[in-house]
Length: 126
Image 1: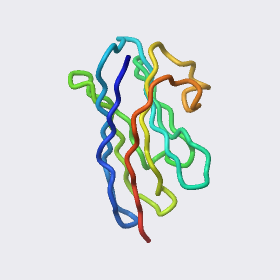
Image 2: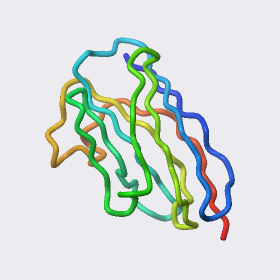
Image 3: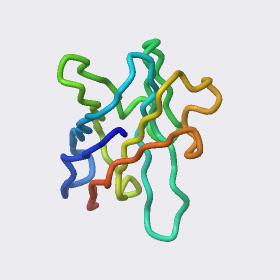
Image 4: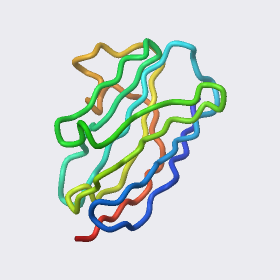
């Protein structure tokens, strides 16, 4: 079992920044894939950033150039640095994990991940 806890959400004005954290514990693997997803009211869950143990990062077009995914392997924490936030970034943000390296075309797909955190709310006002 793998346990994920996401923190760092909050309210911010458009143009501002937030950094989300996802603490990973339990039966983790040295080969893994992790990602951030978000879900806004009445919308599908959207994969926005992924990182695997091979060091490759993947971003959705909606956040590319504004968000940065990274991981502190010593602390086993996944981060999402969010800059230039827009009102349309308002959503619940969730982190996800799976053992093994997910093939690149599937790294932003919900079905690729077996473990999920509880989510943290981000609200961006105009």
